[in-house]
Image (cartoon, rainbow, N blue to C red):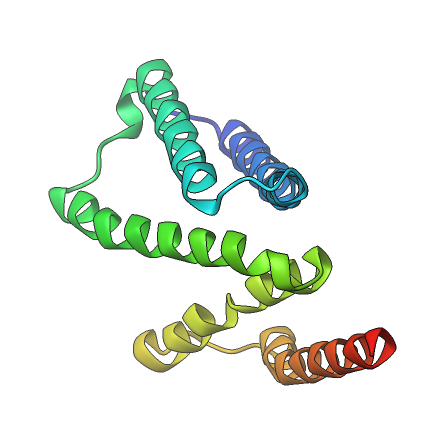
Length: 155
């Protein structure tokens, strides 16, 4: 089946918007779980159970969407385990800080694969990406200062 360029772009925008909304909802639901004093383990299990359901629905609705080589499935396992550990650590650690600070730190962690892709795959670095990478230590410094100031106000 041949897709038109406009249809492919519309689908790409749809998935991008869906990812943004889902990622934002994920943060809200994590804070909600913390507010209700839910244990991180079951929250993590529920999160990954729903992701399995959504993936199954996509595979059923769009059968041709799983046309990747077996290597992709083999790589998906350690990535899924890493993501699960990260979410579990985030859910456990959120009790010790503000959701805004924790969520910002999670988002800043995307700099690690970005730097790895530059060093390993020699991806080109434009001025926007370079500026963003340079601002990450500034953001972390401001987070540290905010945390120190908040602890000073509590004392």
